[in-house]
Length: 102
Image 1 (cartoon, helix red, strand yellow):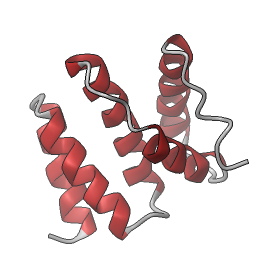
Image 2 (cartoon, rainbow, N blue to C red; image 1 turned 90 degrees about the vertical axis):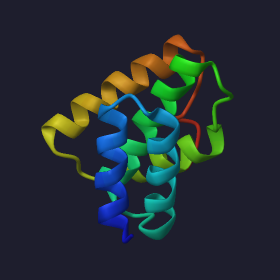
Image 3 (cartoon, one colour; image 1 turned 45 degrees about the vertical axis):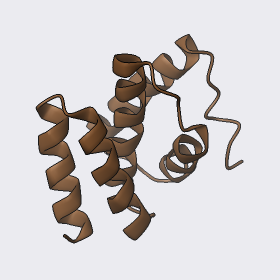
Image 4 (spheres, rainbow, N blue to C red; image 1 turned 30 degrees about the horizontal axis):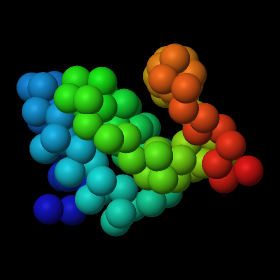
């Protein structure tokens, strides 16, 4: 699968609640297209949701790479809202994504 197909597959899995499968697909898509802000935002959201759902360990390095891209990219209004929600969750979890990439 190409990165767009991986992203679409991951979105479908995410919507079904299959967060581990979604996380793997988003991660693969981000590896192939590391400058794609939609994939980065999807991956970042999935990282937080899968950690909250399963209590698994949080991949801070990957999250910071996603945030570093998103922080320097002009996002659409809905993407900005999603990122703001993710940053709020990060703050509640005492995770500092903003110290990365700056």
